Image (cartoon, rainbow, N blue to C red; front, side):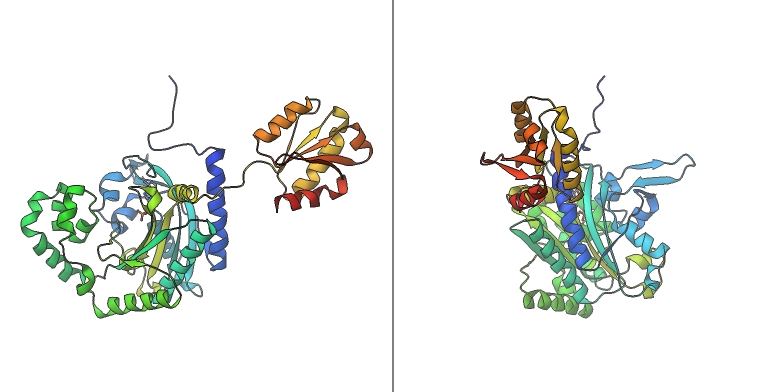
Amino acid sequence: MKIVSVKGMRDLLPADTAWFQRLEQAAREVFAAYNFDEIRTPIVEPTELFTRSVGEDTDIVGKEMYTFADRDGASLTLRPEATASVARAYVEHRLWDRPGLSKLYYMGPMFRRERPQKGRYRQFYQIGAEVLGGNAPVIDFELLAMLRLLLERCGIQDAELVLNSVGCADDRPAYHAALREALGARLPEMCADCQRRAQTNPLRVLDCKVPADQPIIATLPTLESFLDDKCREHFAQLRQLLDANGIAYRVDPRLVRGLDYYTSTAFEFQHGALGAQNALLGGGRYDGLTQALGAPAQAGGGIGFALGADRFVLAMQASGVVPSTGPVAVLVPLTDAELTLVLHLAEKLRREHIRVELAEPGRKLSRSLELASKLQARYAVIVGPDEAAASAVQLKDLNGGAQERVSGEALLDRLRQGVA
Ligand code: AMP
């Protein structure tokens, strides 16, 4: 029987990885400019890390984790997200002892057993960043400004920043009480998850995606009037910074995030081209998470985001971005006799980061040219006995068809000009 990949987990073939690489490169450049460093944490973590930080009553922990017993009986889980892992590493290595904020980014696969559909997979890829060790509103602002730059560098147009403040531990009890009261009589009409959450964690009712529950959810009180002075002031300062720096946003007082650890600022960037899975990225502040994982108060607060790389790629495609794929040139030695010169030229170009492919020597020229166009190369560089004798090449532009003789010396500059 033929073996195929696991449901919801797919191969990323070269046509896909070209897009992922473009995104990853843009992300590394933008993160470096904002002085972030990379962290790589294990893909497998103790299950307890997620139950304690993401929260027992979330979809992720309740229904979606790939959890298994190790041979010694320890419960392990394939990471469903990476903020918990970064926070664990921050605590484990006492990173707050280092100077300044800890500004860390990561890239890699995450695993959630969700129902697969367009833009939603069981193994998907996230790129994220966390700033640990402080809670000033300007930190939140800089993270959002960085994301705006990243979206711009990826050529994604029309992404909308949606913002809310979800309050903190001090104002939650009063809000929960108000939610329970407002839900009151309507609760029996709602889905089983909402009924349970109304008891365990009513805030999570706002995150319910069941269509029939939405009209009821729309009538519930919002957090706004329950925010304490500290959270209110933090949100006001963040909004001021965004306004002063021309970053547009929409406040959605019902935006809550799918993980329990968020406090204060919560945000998403949404994109119309993604259909039901419209969240390109999401994040927020999580002051108190590292303390819940054993850090002292001086470890400070934290804020971060995770972007869905799979969805970013869909949005890049929808915005008309084209990744550069394929070789710049295919080098064609007409016979074996020209191979030495052609190999020498290829090496020289590759050392200068020019992507080139080699056609098989002795093949018919028409077949080599056909291959070059199929590979979407811009040029064919043809070397026959006459050219070899003069250390020259025939440079054929595969876009326009023009062909000219160029010296081996001048080839590098000509190719660079052509693709600039
Ligand atoms: P979260 O970790 O749930 O806050 O998600 C952050 C981002 O990851 C979302 O905005 C999505 O872009 C992406 N994401 C989450 N779950 C999936 C999934 N199952 N498949 C693809 N992307 C996902």
